[in-house]
Image (cartoon, rainbow, N blue to C red; front, side, top):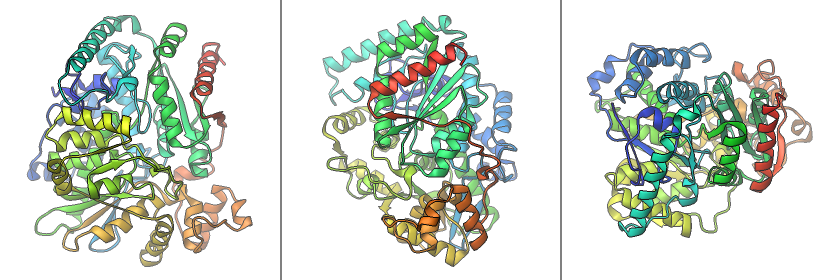
Length: 574
C-alpha cells in the first residue's frame, strides 16, 4: 500500500490514501503526495486502450494502492463514470486539424472538468469513512486554500501556522513538529467518539467547483455543504447551476467581494479552533471540503490524460516519437499538475504548457522563476474560473521539481505568506523549464480567439479553453501534436460567446435587449443563429432554480454567523 507524505515535511507519520482524502491538508499546512509513484510502460498503457473509461480509471486508481478493496474500486469507478455523462467516452478528443486536438472535459452533469473528480471524490469519502471509522475526518477548505486536521478529525490550526518554518532545522521547527505530533496522537484517540458524527463541507469557488461539488455530494450521508462564491464574479449560468443543485442540506452564499475574499474567509474559519469546537460540541459536526488541493480531487484527473493518449493513438495522430504536448488553462494549477503526474507515471507527454488570463502570475513565474503578488489586484476576465492569484497546487509541483525538498518548499511558502513573493533557485527553475512553459492572453484576445476558432473550425469553445488555444498557437511545436484541455462548455459563458461572435470588446456593454436575456435565452439565440449545440445539463428543464443564494459581506464574522445559523436550522429540522 502506498502511503502519503506532505510537501512541507513536518508530519509525524505517513497517511493512508483514505486518511489523506479525508484529512485533505497535512497538519503542518502542506499538501499530501504519494511517497512514491507507480509507473506504466507504454505497452501497459496501450493494453488498456480497448477498455471503457471506468475500467481505465480503476486500473490507475489501483496502481496507487489505496487502502480500498479492488472490488470496491471497480464499483466506485463504474458508479462515478456512468450514465451521468452524455458521451460514453466520458472525455472525448475532438480534432480541429491534424495537429491540434481538444480534450473535452465538459460532458458531465455540470458541464465542466470539475465533474471528472467530483463524481469520484464523494465515493472516496464514503470509503474513507468505512476504512477509518470516523464521520468527521476532513480538511482543506477552498479552491486554493485549506486548514488542517489530524487523521482523527479534530481540527488544528494549520492555516494559521502554514509556512512559518525557516529553512533550517531550528529548535522552533522541531518544537512545532513535536507539537503537531502530540496533537495528532491526542486527536487520533478521539476517533471512536466521532462515529456517527456529521460533516460540513465548506467550499470557496471561483465558479465551477461549486455546482460540481453540490452535484457530486448530493447523495452523501450525514453531510451538509456551504459554498461561498464571489457575488457578481461568476457567470449567470454558473450561478444558476449552483442554485439548481443547492438544497436544504447544501446552501450557497454570495460574498460581496472576489474569490480571494471567499478563500480568505474559509481559511480563517478552518483555522479558528473555537468555532470548530462549537461545531463539534453543539452540532456533532466536523469540517471537511471538496477543495482542489485534496489528493482525492487530483488522482481522478490523471486518468483523463491516459484516456487522451489512448484516443490520440486510435486516431493515428501520434508521430514517430509517440509523444504529444498539452496546453491547460490554469488558475489553481491542479489540472496541469494532474498532467504532470500523468507524465511521471508513463504517459508520453513532452511539454506541459500553462495558459493564463490577465491574472498572469503563473505565466510570469514560468518565465522568470519569481512568484509575486505585490501590487497585483485580481482582475475580472471572461474566464472567471481562472481568476485566481494564489495557485495552491503549485506547491506540489515545486516539491517534485526540487527532488522532494520539503525544506525549500517550506521556505518558499513562508516567503509567499510574509512577503507576498518568492523566487526559486536556478536548479529548480531549470527543472521547471524542462517540463513546463507558459504564457497569458488578454481579455479581448480571448474573445477574438473564440471567434477565430468558430469561424475557422465551426467549433464553439469557452473562454478558458480559448485562452489555452491561443497560448498553444504561440508556444506549440509544429512537429508535435498539441492537446488543448477544454475545461467547460461554451454554454456556461453565453455572454462571452455573444461578445466574441459579435465583435464586442470585453469592457463594452452588451446591447440592452441582449443584456436583459437570461443565460437560457441567450444560449437559445446563439444556438439558433450559429447552429451551436447546448449540452443537456445546461437546459432550463435540468436547472429549475430552487434555492437562491444568501448574500453576505466579505468579513469573516458575518460569514461565520451565517454558517452557524445554517447549522442551527439543520439541527431544528428546518
